[in-house]
Image (tube, rainbow, N blue to C red; front, side):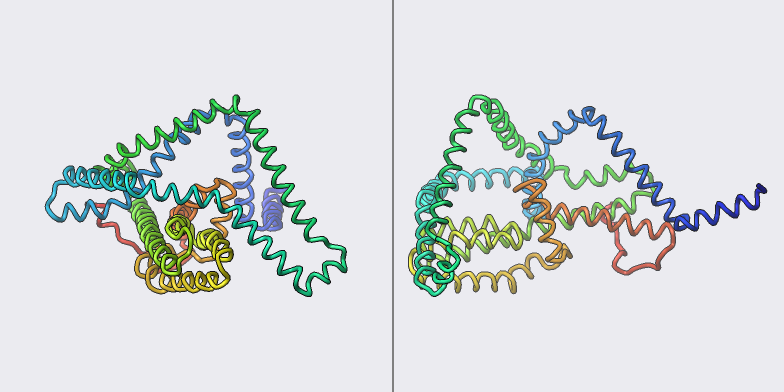
Length: 400
């Protein structure tokens, strides 16, 4: 066959497969799959790295959260002409004093209230179940259940027996596996203690040299990569700091408002429920649902009118938080759609549990920064677009 005909048939075959771009993409995906398969077969080589990351990830994350919370305070003290080292020492002294006051004065009260709530909450829950049962039996809906031979008492008894059996099985498994689980428990406890002990040291160096780290990394990169990397660092830092500082402040405001509201209406365990609302408010959308559930159960048991008062307090808190507090503190710094937030929370919670739920949103925001900028560079490289005003950025602060 002549070379011209071979070239013609090869070109027609490539066009039949979808063109050079599609063929290149398929080959890239195939090579990526082969690379993943190879790394999966030799994953044991990376086990020490995984152990190292598991060991350092908790203290590093805690230290970074505290760093972004305390960095504005450090800058404020430095504006008052206080040297950086002395400003950090002042922050540590004040922090130790506040923690000591909390442990001495507040923690015993919260612990007693929380233990009482844990002990009495099952009785609250069973009273709600029996109240629902009485309402169903006294309504016309009971005739419908009887028509289909549905015994509500039998269902509730089966649920109660199943719960008791589950508790007994769990206790039996705990007793049989206690000897084998002691080592794992000690190892986990040791890791948590070491993480708590090392956090102050990591935090100290972050406060002291944290702002120098991006500049040091930029100097290690080739000159043509520094501008784009500086932009990514700047955006990631802005996303993380805005989320952590804003979310903590919003959660604190919600906790204070909920506690005051519950105290006004006379709800039992108002302070504990307010603290629970503050802690769960860190998780967007899902947090308020978790916080309102025990409060609603306690309100129903106390008096039906208490549930109405609870609804009024919760509505006022959500309106104030949604219309005034969050827009002023959080703004729209994350630019994440609410549906996306829900999907991220569900996925991160399924993959990583509670840490995934708490850290899923800031992690997604940082990942979005990297992916968006890589896509921007890709389009810029192949001249597939004109300059977009939203993608313009400044890096003069990183070049100092």
